[in-house]
Image (cartoon, rainbow, N blue to C red):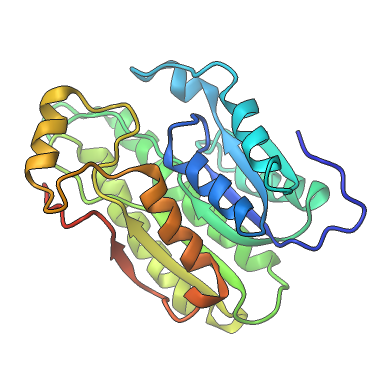
Length: 259
């Protein structure tokens, strides 16, 4: 749902993967709204349904309310990013209802643990369809449609270097990194910056006590990363002050080093 505005003057950010109030995507969407952006955000309930955390009731509505509380127009769009036709349709809808997209923040992910010996071909292909192909297609849509002032466009991808026991996720994120970094050069004529952010292990409710203790022991700042930590960095990258950071793979993880 979106709010009404006769003369929108705020730039539009499209944030993907905003299915839970405790997720990084939700924190990013609210932070950008507080900084003056109108927000379109995607979610995909069938993914949450098959994950251990399940569907968070009324999460989309709660995120929307938090965004609108900052005076932003807001649009929530269910989006199956495994479908290669979704990115173009998504941009069509956002442009029609909010206006042209200035910032693209990709927080969506397919993430199902499996290793070298037990990953199925189906799972491998699904991870690459969602994490890699969809991200390329979203970046391509922004590049094809962007008409904003030179130097104002932004692409930020959430990435990870986790691979052991999480082969298809880590491999597909590695490919995403390269696509994102290429965009910094291939979209240079448009003045769009592109960066990938690795937030490290972030406490969004998926950690058990053992894993939480292990992460704490390996983090010099002696706390877990939060969605707001990632959101503050992404907010900076999307701001005019963040324009000079371009073509980078940024670790923002409190000093954590894992495998």
